[in-house]
Image (cartoon, rainbow, N blue to C red; front, side, top):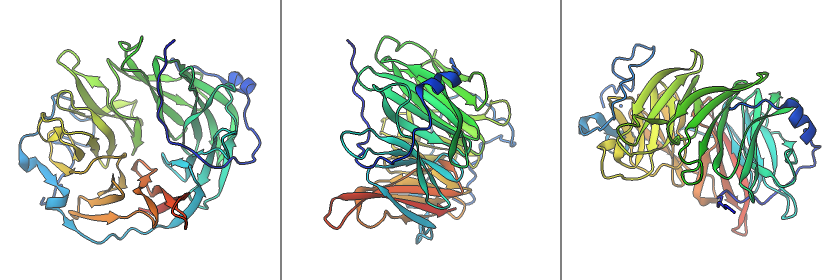
Length: 415
């Protein structure tokens, strides 16, 4: 019997007394298989005219130091001016996810060891929360694994951890309330990694990939898109190997990192697909050989991406840290271990680093430090938001008077 170890955050809190919204019967009723930068630094790629970029597929081995602007060495440090517009305390163990809009999905912790976790939502305008799905609908052997939402769709993964089986489910969302029937989008067994997914508008976008080891390791990976009301999903992109990053949507572009140039070696290509123009490739940046990006999102007409380790080859892009730029350079570079997806708005980029966030302004050529809430655990707070946003959402586990973790503090910053 094959076994696989799964790592996930511990959840230790509540279970809301909200009635169950969906059932196993209504799930199958609604099922639709989806098959399934120093002077004025320009971060827009050379030759870009606002349309589709020239996709050359050439690996970006940057050895010219003039193309790299180091934030902490070349930018000026300034005081942070971002202040929280709202702060709300959530039960310990709650994890929020903010893809876009005025709502954030909540992976809620169970009230006790005898109960399972639940799925909820929070209004970023009022702070009101509600539980939307109180029990897994696939079966009693499953538990909630992950969740995302936009203003129009709510999606989650249920998983049988013992068997390694998972199901991706979605349901329409209106004013923070589930409507219609839930739809099964995809599923997998022990050989397939639980779907990495995001929500935007009325769409759910996910990647289906085999685990790097296992019976299906040689299978191609696919990125799919499904819209509320569609009979089935659409295959957006095929990768001859695993995608390196989670799918991220920002400014109407989907960013993925498929394998490219497979005949020449192991290369990953940061790829921006224009969701408003027939999903055409709008920009691409091929990483140096074997250098795997940790996170990537196309925002403000540039890629904001990170590398988790020092590879010792591949030029500047083989170094650990976060980069902002396009194929050919120049790049703005923060030499800190990356921990999350970059978020922000316009020339303002918010980059998670250890217990705080760097707030980098590539236009003003400055950076500030956004600190975590008082009494937060050593790792500080994390961004729940991704890519371009009007609302920066962060969350942190905060200690009580006894020094023990007591609650999760969610903060909203207007950008």
